[in-house]
Length: 305
Image 1 (cartoon, one colour):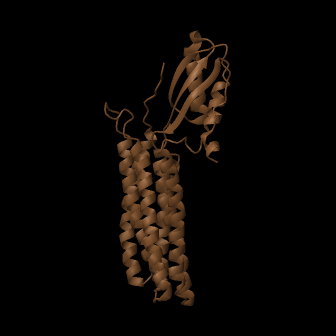
Image 2 (spheres, helix red, strand yellow):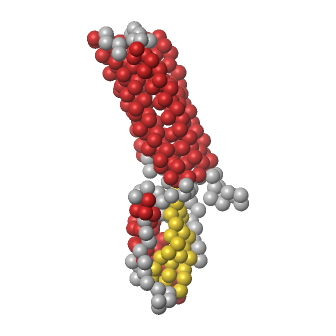
Image 3 (cartoon, helix red, strand yellow):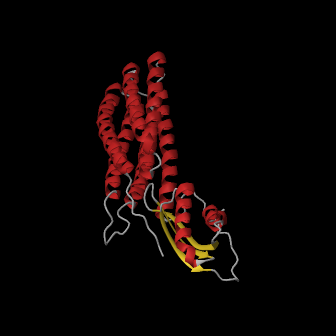
């Protein structure tokens, strides 16, 4: 008999609140930093402002996706709208790549035509941005187990490193007057954006394709289940991501004694929850046949390697 636990964690609500506040602060400061970059002539500040603008929109999208994920399941969406979190992570990663490409192009153009930059003012603005990003990162960090919150944290981490680059750029210009450091800092920020977004896209697309979560191995899970004293073998094992922090599993379990299935079922559920963090479990029992041999569940990622 299949078994499914509907569950909406309280932490999802707190994560959504943190993301909403982070979005408002990020968008507000992005506007101020853009004005500051225009006033000081610093491309690094303008790049960081563009990064924060995109990230602020991404944080807003993440908060909206989190709200959708908390909505109760319906007859039309039996799992609820939790997959919106995964989709938002993919959109965020794509937006970051576009931002990185635009800023990188502008930085390369600026390398050939350096412009005067007010290093002192740029340094102070970048320092304020760094302080804000560190504060936001601290607020989001407790929710990093959630894919959507982790995606947002990657955005903020990129902003933090971007603020550091802008800070170094402003300080160097203030002390030495060497303006090429400004577009070079912008290129560094673009590289950070590209690396984080590609990692995020890989994880998000993998989840949308219903792949086994990267932190899990289907072989390890299957062998752990098959090691139970009442289990003869496990087959048709499927593990996939429902939403950012919710993983589902279904499998056929060949048991030695169907009369003990209720006990076996609860013990397997406890095993999957405690060892692998899987709470949404559907298991179908099958009677043991003397000719059956326990076969380890293969890890699909090994076949791809």
